[in-house]
Image (cartoon, rainbow, N blue to C red; front, side, top):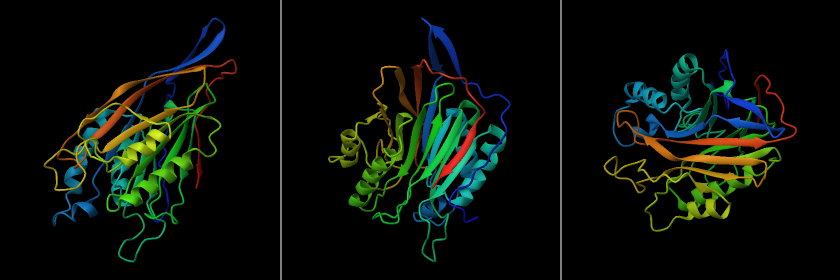
Length: 306
């Protein structure tokens, strides 16, 4: 299908992941850990640039096994063709009850690059949140012409949301990737009155040991910090490429709010060379919100903004 995104929704029989309790008569919304992951699954179109074989079908079971081992509540995916996306969500959506969203990098492609050749996806466990809003950037004016994808997920009982963005920054031209990231940071700051926490994750194509790290500087100057993990996500020996080491990142930024307390666990990584040339990374976040106006959660509501 040539849709810009696709939603696969599955009914969940229970959705409560957060609970409320009274402390000194102040309502407190305290969360179980919310695990956020990021995974570049290696688009077979790019795999064939380095060889003559498309190994997607043999890699798919190992990708699924890696996702299940990490067990993320929200998983951001890069290098997703529409066909690969359909294969993956047919398993993880049906059997693991993930809700899924897809966005191609480009609205229009060259004649030899059909829509859906490459893109981004996000999988979430919908029963953990009160609702979801989906946003996609309009990047046709950007140097890379790549679109980015982000979600707002509402913490039950709080009326507040977390904004989670996924990106795959351009590796072929440094300035293209830098501009793409700067524009993404600008985009996610818009219409953010109800956002208490921002997460940006994905394949940054910038390793932790590189002499110059302008993309890390963009995040730092925008108030973001990383989850502290420096585990190599594309180890030496995978391929002879420019960027090695920890090139997949989870960055976050919180909004100053005395009623909000956030803890996080240093990031982890899982890798299986039979699955992808990248490792899956993930971080656990804990949220405690003290709100006099804290309210009961409601059934999930899903909307999209393009």
